[in-house]
Amino acid sequence: MSTFVAPVHAAERVAQLGQRIRIARLRRGWSATDLAGKAGINRNTLTALELGKPGTAIGVCFTVLWALGLEQALDAVADPDADLHGKALEASRRPTRAAKPRKVRDDYDF
Image: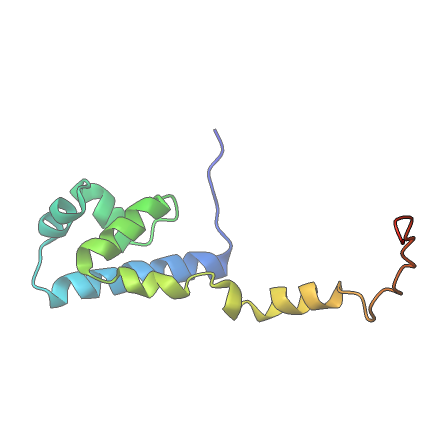
């Protein structure tokens, strides 16, 4: 069985998200048990999320954000309109000029 090792930058971002979720929970005055119950997950799973454990399922993260009322923050995640690099790559593959119009053979011209 292999152990998943996230790239350092990704691991830092996961830890940062966990900290933000913890802050949101504390601002609401909720215990870990309270939030876990609202999200329908185990308290240990919530703790793993808040500690930034990279193996925590993304569905858990989305559910916890929903329970906190922060699901609208997900609208910007991987938004195709904000993907400037992807859009540039797509544009570079487009033809630089329009194709020459084909001569249409009109066998049915009366």
